[in-house]
Length: 259
Image (tube, rainbow, N blue to C red):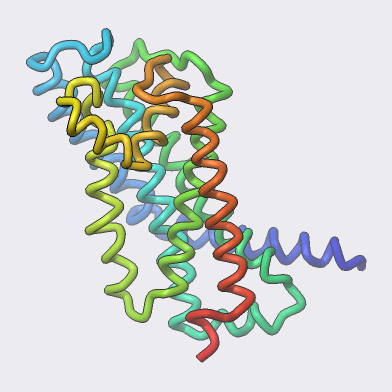
């Protein structure tokens, strides 16, 4: 058997293991996002939305759908990788991967593919849920929508991997999602357009990376955005390259793994 085929089989095996990991406990991983997003649609879309009126010329619930999908993709792709990689560190089973012939880039890719699959799956589930509340929803640019969906899942899977590398306890894997990720998501234009804000706060919002992710996805789904799409896509790809290189470097060094 050739070396490339061995690596491919190992990569597929690790990816399947990551996917089966969250599918085995689907009640904890797939159902809660669907229930949570349903509550958002009921409260903000059905009850509060009519009082708010339109947003950028769209029904408020329609405007909100892309943001809620992105919020689900970000949190689930991130949490899947951070919890999975920290678990193999904690259980010392990471040693089995490191001493195997499997290269480090394949190990990293296997965990990232697991996070991406969960993020994309949750995004599809939330989109299906949204159709119950807004059946007339149509996607304006499917190619851009799918591209941003996968790029976002990759980006935040890498962030989750970096968090897991430096985490020393289970508490450490919840600090960043709770105190950094969640506030940035909520302030990233999920529920409002930054054009509503005063100039001072609008300029501050432009420093929030979540704003570019949410608005690029909204451009793909609805054709409206508060930011430049080419610049936003360039930023997402740049961060993926930087975080991917940093993750592989840390894995090669054994940071947070080899004591």
